[in-house]
Length: 196
Image (tube, rainbow, N blue to C red; front, side, top):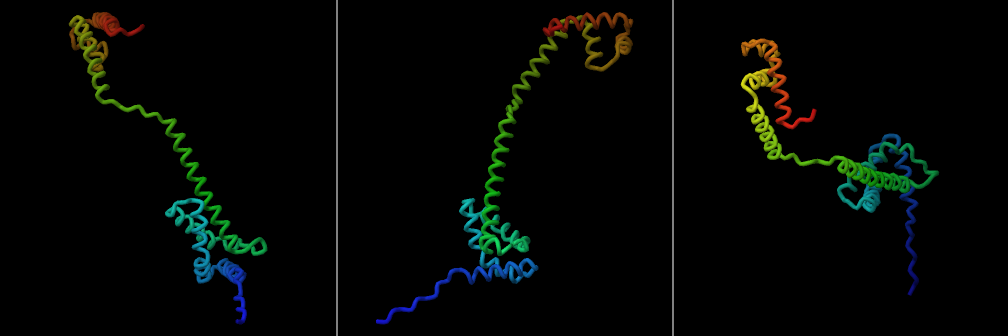
């Protein structure tokens, strides 16, 4: 039995040189070269991104961003600093890490904002009851005034009339209206329990 001849081992140098040549062509705007680059690196880019993000949908999005960046930034590739695949994978890794950091920063901002915004539930019923009770107190206090006091206060504060207009409406002297209104407001203040 004769020994088998060893098959040539593919050490990736052929692909490496081809990718570097294609990246130089992409830097010159060669779309066909970019299609070939895309075919060579799309799967490995997605794999690197998926390992970082662990979310297939986001990984697809970031992988597309990486490939767009490869198209736009191909002129920055320098073969003396590393292989074309290493350059592309570095971009992929950085983009994925940036996405994770952005998501974490967003979560922190949202948490901080949520802690700052303390929403108190608005209770329509309680507010309505409170307004009704206030109105009832006000009506009770108004009913404790004399007729001239009640009319003077009502015209001035709810009708928006001046002292002179109230005097004309009630057909009484201006001084009388002022006195009755002052006395009526003092009684209202005492009835409502308003501090001086």
